[in-house]
Amino acid sequence: MFSWSDWVHRRVETIQFETYDTYRRQISVDFTLPANSGELTLAGDDQEVYFTPLTLLKKRPLTNFDLRDEAGAAIPLLTKDRNASLAASLLAGLASLVAPPLLKEAHGSVPPPDIDLVFMKLALTEGDSGVDPVDELQPVEGMEEASCLWREQLLTDRRFLATARILTQNYLVIVPLCGPTGVRRILKLSYDEPPTRSDAWLQDAPAEGVFRKVLGWIVGEEIGPRPRSRPRPRRIRRSLGLMSDVRSISVPAASYGAGYHLEFVAPDGLNITRGDLIPIRNKKVARESIQTLRDSRRRAHLYLPRGTDLPFGASEAAAVVHLRPSSATLVRATALLSLFTTVLLVFVGFRWEGLVENIGVVPGLLLIVPAGLAALVARPGEASITTQLLLGIRSMAIFEGFCAFAAAALIVGGRSCEPGLLGENCKNWEATSLALLVLAGASAVVMCALFIAWYCSSHPPEQAQP
Image (cartoon, rainbow, N blue to C red; front, top):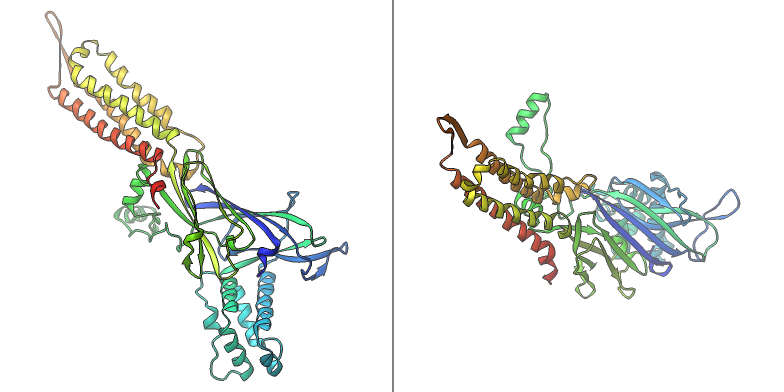
């Protein structure tokens, strides 16, 4: 683990945004198993088996986990208990390495059994339990002298404490591999990962409203509030295309090899407008090594150069990605259709008295807009995150269709005819002109918002930021 950069040539990680609150990680590990790997057992055909640490995963629920070799065959993983036993043994072996010779001569070459129990507790604990190795290793009154001296020594070793914290918060993905060492291999693992409370884009749930209380009374049970992904004003601006959806994702695997390649994949209808890969050393941002992509595309690639020093246990990395609706899909077409709707409403608002003689033409002309919007807005089979980020754009498009439909209904419904001596006497509502101009003004306001959204998607402001 401490020499991952020596035998892991490259890690390629792909993050796909499939749903609004879940993304899928696909990790490819290109490595050559070193010749000094410890042989632990033999397979049934007398091949050597090496338990190889591939990566670390957060101790939280993972769905759709899959691990395969170069040929696409599934590879088994250790069970949770055996994984914890091996992680605890790793801590015990590291403790023996960092202990000074005088301590081992006086009190044995391995930690006492009570410290082994602490190692097992750290390996079995949940990642969000708040257990800290420093607290667990503190000596207390009544302990044997050997245990106190071992604990004091381990508490002063920064490398040991960093490793203990990592194994407390993460699973060590250990794979039994058969075959000789010195052969280059590529293994691939993938899983769905939900955001956690520590992620930047999750906020506290809103307070329970009156609607939920009434609905709970009807169904006979309490209905809790649904967590919001962002405060409401930001969520509205983001769905209107005026603000990018920012996702911050931890990428600790950047320090687990000689080279690291990160790829983001946006679903159909969205673009990645900016991506930043930020190395963090000793909890400080390494600004000189930040990799930034300022371009709009569905697939964004970021690399950490081979010379980037990210030692195990002391460094990690974070990725920040901006998502926006693609101007080539719904945004541009909706903006142009809103322009057509506004011009049509203004024309009808000023010329409706001359057009009303042929009453069948005007509603037919106005109802072209809702028909076109229905074909434009309906997009079956899209990802849920695309639906969320296009909700405001679709709402404005529907409002444009409503304005055209309301104008047609106003002209038809506001006209009344009575039989007379010379034929029918028809008249219209006196405020028809004013109502039509109000609808045209509302359509113009929405049109301006759509054109601003079009401009922001074509010229994202975040690309100009330092």
